[in-house]
Length: 115
Image 1 (cartoon, one colour):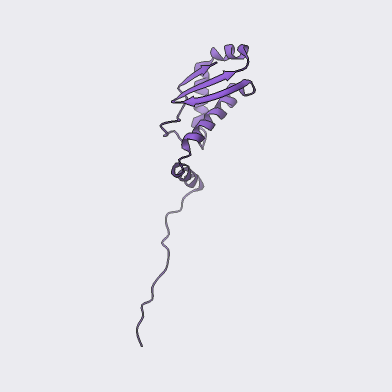
Image 2: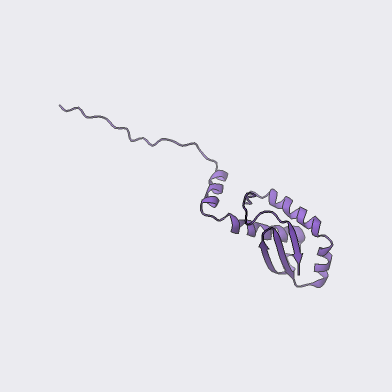
C-alpha cells in the first residue's frame, strides 16, 4: 500500500483581540477616522456649549471649529467663554472611545470661531 501523508489543515490561531481593538482597526482600515472625528467634535460642541438648538451651521477643518448661531445674544455670551469651551470640548473628546487623537486632518479643537 502506498503511504500517504496525513496533512494537517488546522488554522493557526492568532492573538485574540478585544472588541475595542477590532473597531479601531476597522475605522483605520476603512479610513473613517477623519469623518468620525468631525462628528465627535460636533457632538462635543452640542454637549459642552449647550447651544446645539441655536446652531445653524458647523464646520471643522485643521483644528478650527466654525460655528454659525442664530442668536446674537448667545453668540456674545459664548464668545466670552471661548477658551473654557475649547478646553471642555477637548476633555470631552479625550474621554470619547471613538475619537482617535492620531488623525492629522481632524484632531482636537484648537480654535473656535463664532459667527
